[in-house]
Length: 471
Image (cartoon, rainbow, N blue to C red):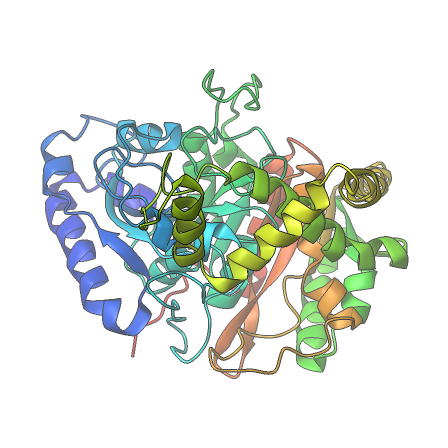
């Protein structure tokens, strides 16, 4: 899709304007956009060449865009207009991409539903009564609705890969350090990754080619050369060793999802892959969510201490500085965020750090070591990205938070954020007319292997360039 667009430069102005207008027309039903970006000015300074030249895209609203409001989905930043571009914003511009929207997201990227944005929930284009998943749900919705072929997200626990599953598209979280995070409003610095959505594995390869690379403004970014990821798509899965994450499959209670996954596994075996079950320690798998929750909340409380209405954010009136900060943070943040900051601050109290925050970091290391042991034998770990299709927006049944279905099947993908390993979701099938995905995780810097296996799955299912008309 992307290469076809680039190869037809005569259609650039029309396609970008159409994407812009289609995004606006879908807003009443999807609520996927926080700020629309008119493409006309960008088209006037389009580079003469580039891998994304003339391709309309969307950018998650925690990525700084010079002169364009960047709210991170929070009321407290609803007046923030950056004076600089994030590194990835510049890379996209230099590659010729044309941004038509800053997309909806869970407030400050803290959530997995896209229900907590200050503009209200985003809606799934396959069924607008259902969630998109979060926190990058607005970007996922625009790609799934066929409005843009690529959109930027961010992934701290599964915030690209879960929306990709719920919206029937490709969602990629590369290796930690593969893409610069300079200019991306942080959530949890040790877990945050820039990610993105496309509708095909081929487009995912092109997108990473543009986004990847060293950035001296982000000292966590890698000096490793950027390979030609598209070359991986010429390879076979013959002899590739794939580990089924058996703990997840056993935790999935939905028989349709299990059956769909098992049929996919059989077809991978027929394609020449060696696919075997692999068990992680059950206690470690059940510890993923509480470990993530502890580390994420503690780091977020620290990262966002400057959002006080004085240094940053919408300022509320108060008799003195303390009251101004209290009022600004109370009114500027939603209830979920306030709760998370309280929990995070508690974990950072000097008397609590060793028994809460440091303990979570130690458990994280155990999980990462277990993944390393698996990768000594296997090229890839695979499991359903979710046990079910996207939940209904108005579904008030939170289920059993201590069940294996919830603790493991719905939250295991954070393990790739702990390790920084590359991970992606591709469509696996449909249930009740809605998509569900399969997740792949490979060893660090092995994106080429990951894309090879993902392309084999795409060929098996035939789910390439999936999109739906918003009704």
